[in-house]
Image (cartoon, rainbow, N blue to C red; front, side, top):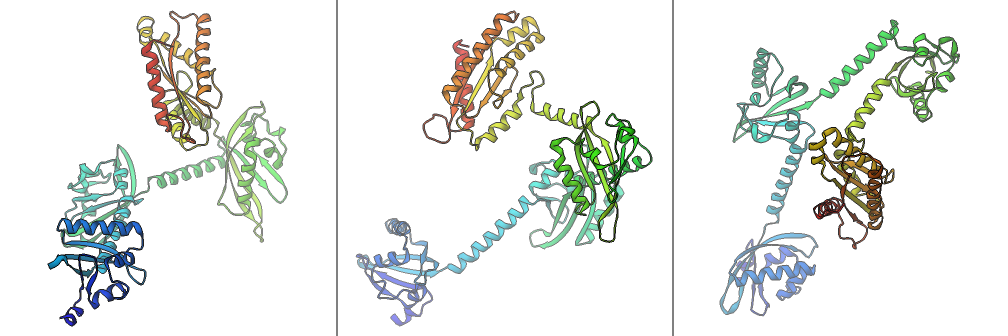
Length: 532
């Protein structure tokens, strides 16, 4: 019988109540690599199979639990004599006199295969979900089975609204109907199809490169993958380059664009009349050399402009392109877009001649700066707005500006003022409050209007005591203004403040967002208590 058990493909172990191993077959010794002399007791087994004390403790606890609750099957990860890991499935059976029979099957290969399949599935799901290209999975009738995040982002749709739909009912093609039918038939007949397609998304045209291929599938007969790459941005860039080219052509034909022609070898630069007049000069007032331009470039822009010129002269760039400020004759600064290209090189590749244009983009730059200002500032008060305030909270969260204090303020009786004296008077109160707050803090502090009559201040590197001083300063300034400002009723404001310091464990508030909420709560406590 012993010889027969030794030949079994499963490990067999018998232990008594005291944990002595009465029998181990040859298979279990081969599976683990441990000899009979090394494993005489259950305690020997635990020490060898679980060298880590915590793992050993857990294995013992699981075994005791299984015996007490008559659970006859459990899988363990054990350490072999060779030092590697194996997964064994243990089945327990109670014998006479309290003995326990262990039947042990090595399932390491099965576990490994399962893990590999799981890893492959995770990799595929991650590639599908997080791909930089939109991917939609279709059945053989072009109904949507699944779509990844990028696909939903490109077409501004939600997954729940498109699953099960015919794909052309889920997206809006900007193509002629006969072309659509023709291409659908082509896709159905081919295993691989690729083309540039126009879509309409939120009434705007999107250009996409679409690659469609199919694979056989038992469940769906045929699976169709459509990979969509949004190339709208590159199309717009092509359009912009085309516009630049057209501008250069207009300049050559005498349009109102400054032209310069630099003979590098002779150190001579020719400027046209428009180049001079753009800066308020007459052409006769300018010398024909590079220093004429260089001496007019803003000091902050000069280094980059020279670098861009040098890069193009060395043939590192296709063309010279730079935007910089030039000083006008009146002393003002004007933004110029400067574009040039080497048109001639000698036999050694050295530049001989470079021709370019100056385009006046001053209004464009100022408009962009105005838009940027308005996107971050409140139009009425000139303070930062809620959007900028929230971004600053995020930015300062992991900064080295702690301790950070936050003050939250809310004007009192603004609705009554609006109702009784009109909204223009209400706006006057809001602006007076904004001025009082702004003048009471440092330039590096962030003061924002976050609502109609709500204000918030971020005070980097400011502790609780200093924040308290600033609150007093604001209230004092408002009181002083009330004495000299002719207002129907005095301006009053409720203020709450809190401090957070993530570098120690003493303060009550450690998170900057919680700090803001706490300051907001304190402000309302002040408001309801009638204190200003």
